[in-house]
Amino acid sequence: MKKILIQIFIIGFIISCKNQKSDPQILTKVSQKEKEEKYSYKIFSLENDITYRNEKGDSLALDSLRGLTDLNKNWSQDLNKNQNGKIKEIVLRKTTKEDIALRKRVQKKLENGAKVNLEYFPVDCSNLSPLLKQIDSADQAMRNSGVYKPEIGKENLNKVINILNQCGMPNWEQVPRYQFSTIFFVIQHSSKEVRRSYFPILKKSAENGDLKKSTIAMMEDRMRMNYGKPQIYGTQIYRKSNSEPWKLYDLQNPERVNKRRKEIGLEPLEQYLENFGVDFKIEQEK
Image (cartoon, rainbow, N blue to C red; front, side, top):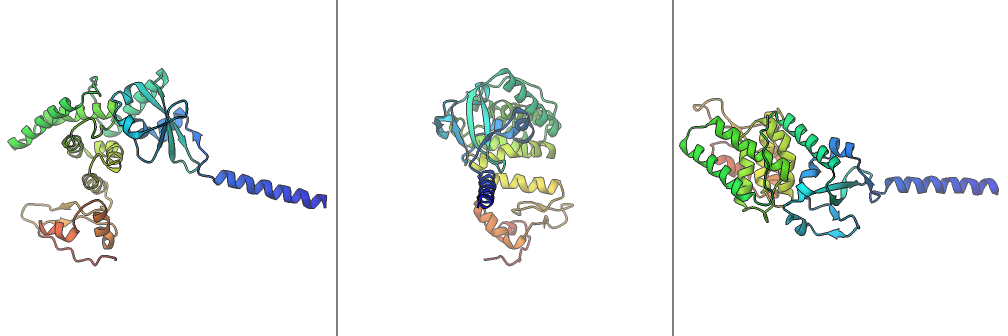
């Protein structure tokens, strides 16, 4: 009888341990090293699917955090992940010297990945709109002239990267909506390395509703084309010379493309391609 009871106890203990290990609601704090290596983009963004708290444990409304123009300057985040490695909770606290050093390392890693030699200047995160207006005016003047000026493109990119590194991606409460496009197009018209480095920040902005999902889909397709992968939404076409017809770049699961396009607010692919004289006749899954 004693032996049976011991066996029951052991089995119960093992089951208890397994349940505890598989419980996705158990959160553990992410170390500074792990934050730098795996979750660096969390430093620069606010996300709808994460619970935010102060150091006392009080829940913080995302809308109120969006109004903090000094968020990335004076506040830092302790990240808490579930056992699947997904960040579920972020605790905001005052920034320390260690946080500043971490942020600088992450910024340098982003810049190295983007292959840019950043000319640093302090950005007033509480007043971004005038700087973005300046960038937009310079970009529009250059494009309206019909002559690309590398020095203007480089200067605009330098300003946008300084904004993203120091302030994160702004939200619609901080700047007019059209200025999201200013940031997007400067990154979109830069190098493939810049797009790859800063795409996660822009994508999170689209997931939060600040940047159009259809806009970020265009960048994602272009990135995949740059690195030899099939596109997802069918936004990228190409031709080798002006005398040749347009062609649709390779497409992933083409039988489901219109479903994906509808989810982000785009018209059916065949309708889009009509503008370029490209036929698309692949039957779509119901």
